[in-house]
Image 1 (tube, rainbow, N blue to C red):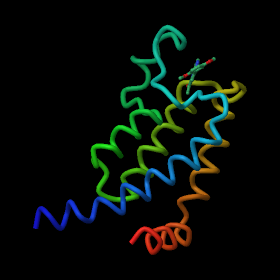
Image 2: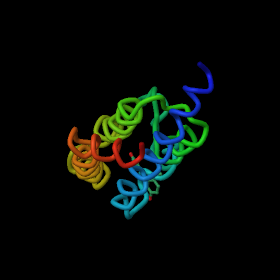
Image 3: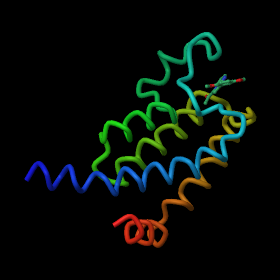
Length: 121
Ligand SMILES: COc1ccc(OC)c(-c2cc(C(C)=O)n3cccnc23)c1
């Protein structure tokens, strides 16, 4: 039973690594590459209680913490939503989050995911 679950995670891991590479390429300013800290964003840790960033998502992929693409997608949406909560609409961060969210959802739409699932087994 455990082996089957482990075996299942191989393909999912490859799929998520491929997805993250594609989506993260769009974050050219690397605003989402690392955790936001209170030095660059005053009060961030008291406003955003569930921070998320690409490096954290990468670590979760590497340790097979995601058991489905849906789990990965919810971390991705959390990351984008945090930026639209903390930052005001006119800021570059808010706009970058909206753009990134649109790109990510296009990559993770139903059709694409089923193709990816077939490709990665
Ligand atoms: C200006 O250069 C950087 C470099 C890294 C950043 O986050 C990892 C950010 C950054 C990223 C964010 C986000 C994503 O909310 N942010 C908010 C306020 C102030 N700075 C940021 C900016």
